[in-house]
Length: 163
Image 1 (spheres, rainbow, N blue to C red):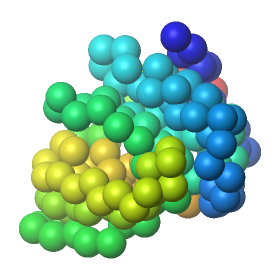
Image 2 (cartoon, one colour):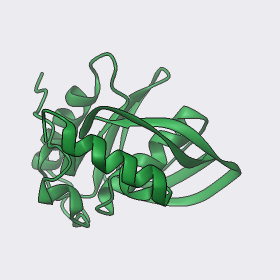
Image 3 (cartoon, rainbow, N blue to C red):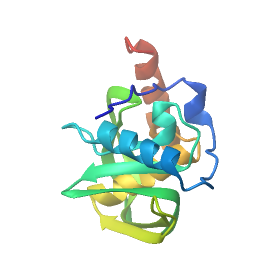
Image 4 (tube, rainbow, N blue to C red):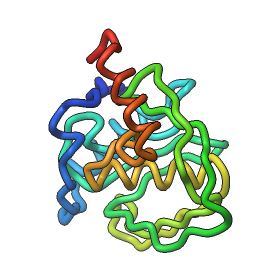
């Protein structure tokens, strides 16, 4: 089991739009295992590749009894209401802020073998799909907050002992 260290907000890799995966080989399988192992501990829901310092468009999840990964994901559908949901992030440890998220989300991409997959969910699972796909687009959730909340979040980050 390889639980990789998490990069924190301020690390340039978290601001990078990730490179799509093109080689479905043993190195991808190893990355998927590392992401899955890193997402598995209690209190975690998912981990995107840039959070462990890797510029690849992939994330793994371990949430609500569902375990998996998705390569080159794209959010293809959202629905329900856009509402504020308390959100945190391993890359912004200890800080939680109400974040606008759709109640339903569907993501399409590939599995480790290059086969088409669709992953969808509601509530917290939908929140995770949106959150992790944002990571792959170089966005950390606090950057999506409404202006005043974002100002509060950035001030809290500056006061954090990990920053």
